[in-house]
Length: 143
Image (spheres, rainbow, N blue to C red):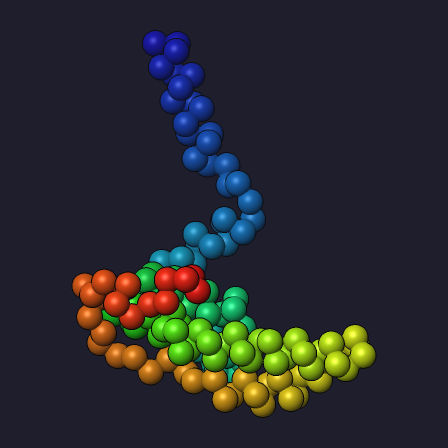
C-alpha cells in the first residue's frame, strides 16, 4: 500500500508540474478553434509577404492538422515539396545570399528581397490525392 501510494503521488505531481511556460501556454490555446484560425490567417498573410520564410512554411501544416483540415495540409506540403517549387525557393535564397555578399557584408536591402519573394508562387494545389505515392511527384534527392 505504501509503495502504491508513493507511485500515485509521483504520477500526480509529474502531471501537475508544467515543464516550461511555453508548454503551459501552448496547451492552453492548442484546442481553441478561434486561436487556431487566427494563427492560420496570420501565417498565410506572413507567407504572402515573404514566401522564403521557412519558419512560417514549416508551421502551417501543423495548424492545418490541428484544425483537422487534412486535405489542406497535404496539398500545402505537396506544393512545397514539388521539384519546381523547391528549385524556385533555392534559387531565390541563393540570389538573396549573393546580394548580401556582393553588398560588402553589410545588411541586405530587404526591400529588394521582399519584391523578389513575391515572384515565388503561392500554394495552388487543391484536392490532391492523399493516397498517391510521394515518389511519383517528389524529388527524393532534394528532401
